Image 1 (tube, rainbow, N blue to C red):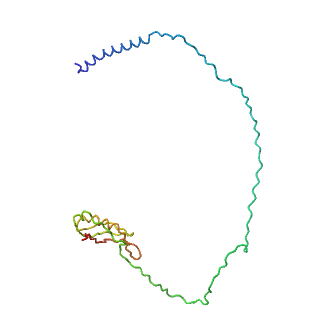
Image 2: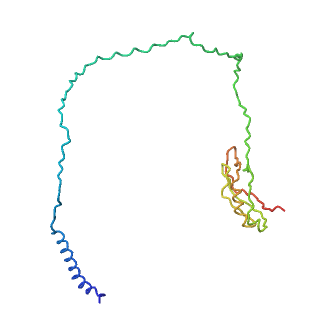
Image 3: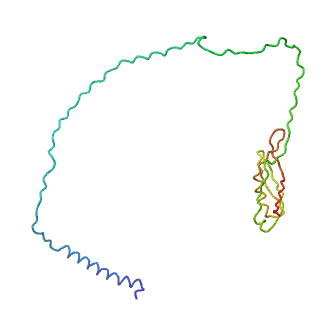
Length: 208
């Protein structure tokens, strides 16, 4: 019956009107009740506690007119310092030797300069790589070797590191060890140069 919303509205509206009327009637009865004053009311009068204002005489002090000051005298100039030759004590230079008695007047036809040899050098490792034996290879008893190819820049740092190993278990450790090696860079005519396609062999062997 109450599943239909129209029926619920038709029933709910009259109920709401009845409840509202009952509430209004109850409030009206409460408001219209007679008020009875309590007996024996005592009135208290508060005396003024504010003191009478006293008149204060305000005296104004006359200001003196500003007095014009004379221009201040300029400070005296600083004393001049003079120094004579005798006042300055400088060490006397002592120059030994004598000019040549005769200067050759012949013309210099040629100038001989000894050649300076500048050696070339290939990239060389300052410290050898220190690889760590892979734990997986040690547990399985695997030995192997790697050829690590890389390039060396002008600062002696290896880059483009790539390892070719007999077993892939050694590849990562070989590349890590060689990438941390410091090299003396290649020297060409006294200048640092890059070194390409360097091969560094590594061997991984178990202690017998």
